[in-house]
Image 1 (cartoon, rainbow, N blue to C red):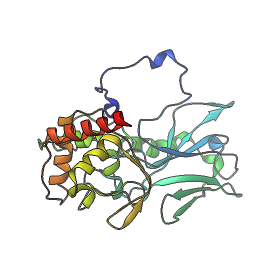
Image 2: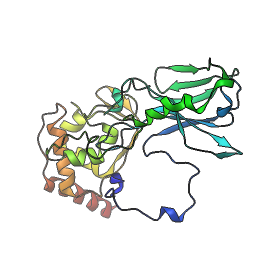
Image 3: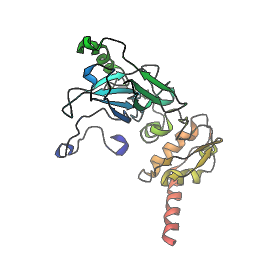
Image 4: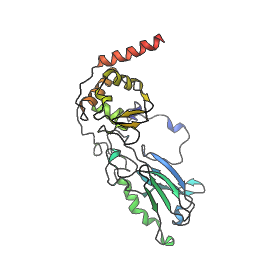
Length: 284
């Protein structure tokens, strides 16, 4: 994984360890699981598992993935066969570059007393109730062909390295580093997610004190903060593993874009803040 220093090509020794019972594409963001024991749906769903995927755009240059409800058939207590797309279309459109563009994102599952399936949304209390109105005895695999074809959509298929690359091929300094290390939380457009991660757009946290901004990137931040009048309580990891030049490029990109129109940063400014922090810690 590029976020952890990988090159997207080398593989580890994962095959030496116990393998999962079933695997899904990376960054689908599974949020809830329910084993179906009701009687409303056709027999094929009996004792199988429904999984809600919240969806994520932590895929650097590719569209958002997940954002659907899948079904895993079970037989004798074990997964049997390929997983299926059970409910999709929550995003409201096929290709989503920033998660804020998605109309809805499933997060919770529950089975009703009548065997219907409830799907909840992570915001504003939206809940869907899925019921089956067909003839259960006439249900067959052919009815699943249309849903199987949905695996070819942008939010489910394995992205094509060329056709699904929405980075635009721009050579703006710092943008590639930003997309790699920052866009997963702060989005490609620098906007907040309305919930956990604050915006980088038109905020004093970005355009203000340079040393404070550099220190924040180097050492991370935890606790309640207020950005543009809204409170956020997320956790930002430290990026001290990046070089001074890389941090300067990222922060220069952020300060010059997202309607910030501020000044650039130089690598030696990052070096100064990094060394000053080390000296303070050594004196303690």
